[in-house]
Amino acid sequence: MDCTTVKKNLGLQRCIKLPALPRSIITTPDDFFFTTEEMSTPALFKTAMQDAILAGVAERIYLWPNFVAFEDVSEEAVYEDTVLAVMPVRDGQYRFRFHIRENICVHKAMYTHRSNKGRAFVYDIEGQLTGTEDEATGNFYGLSIVMIHTEKLKISDGSVSTKTPIYVVLADNKELDLYGAIADASFINTVDRINDVAIEVSGAFAATDFDVTVKVECDQTPVTGLVEADFILTNTAGVVQTIETVTELNGVYTITAPAGNPFEDGFLTLVAPADLTLTGYEVLTPLTVNIP
Image (cartoon, rainbow, N blue to C red):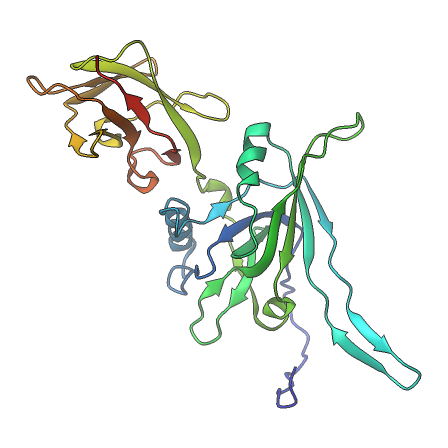
């Protein structure tokens, strides 16, 4: 705080609005923000958040699974104490450890999110999203992080359950102390996350048609309801091949070529998450198609 800071008045408020117990976080790129227009109504705010979750990898934000435990391990403020004075040195960092209980597959996925940059919104049990506000534009940013570290699994000892600890350190306490902002995000439990899915051949490949299944990688749950527009088949040179029809029977999709235009060797995948007719799926490794 510099010497020119104007002291604000401290009148008591009728409504107390403060961050509550954290329930989850949303991690974002450094330059991501919600605009005041996107946050003007709950419906627009939800749409903007869902779009950002489904965006391309470079712009994507990630809504983490709900926490089952929370530890505030923040650094205490540091003061120099002499015989003549007590002088502030630094405020101390905000540091938190969250615990998530899902499965080994989700643990491995969270392990890939280790980072020393980016931002994080904190979602709490009151349905609030805490971040920081750009006073010039009103844009709503997450809090800058200097580290997000997925720690090794905490294995059950028979008295507590196995959990994934996530250690988060904020870069600058003044973002919250000077520019902190809270937004209502009580809709967040209706926002869809992305699941990684795998396409697998069912039977044998043929130039005229072949069968595949699409399953969630973590728990092998079948994905049903996809249509022809959700699939992309390319040849080995990356040129898109025409798919005549896609039909589904009991979770098995039959991919059929146009008459007189048989399939070539190539790769089968799904369109980008934002373009799918279903919400919340992405193929990381396309299926290799080998036509005999």
